[in-house]
Length: 189
Image 1 (cartoon, rainbow, N blue to C red):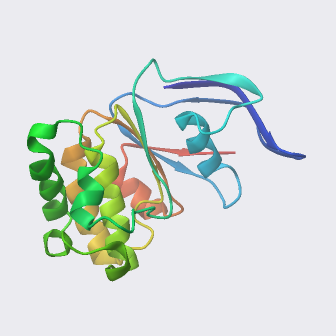
Image 2: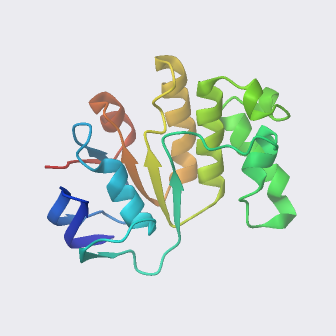
């Protein structure tokens, strides 16, 4: 993925001016910057949810999936149904969703609704759903932020095999998390 000359502003506030970045295909890249420096905005630009004023983002016609900071689970669906709804291959939809829930130690929560889940459980289900979508490029906005240290380590280890060969851009404020999970760390100016 290549970002060239990217310029983006919200009203009078310049977020990016002539930003150039290259994200290596097939690896996990952590993106770091102080709060308010445009990390989430960059993910939204890559996903096509926002349009730059200038410059280009070349994703080479690949599919893009995004996990937002807040879980955004559908309240009327169980944890399992929330994950199943994005699985493309209908023949093993439930199997794939359960595989992810088990990997993230959520099998016991499969039939629970979002209002019955802790914040950390909802975050893990949101990550499972993002991975289940099976996009070529996966944008993760602070996917481990609501997790305690032990659960974070467990989920990072469990997620890596599912992400093998994918281009992943992870936003985080935690340098230890970035170094433990990512193949490469980029600091935004």
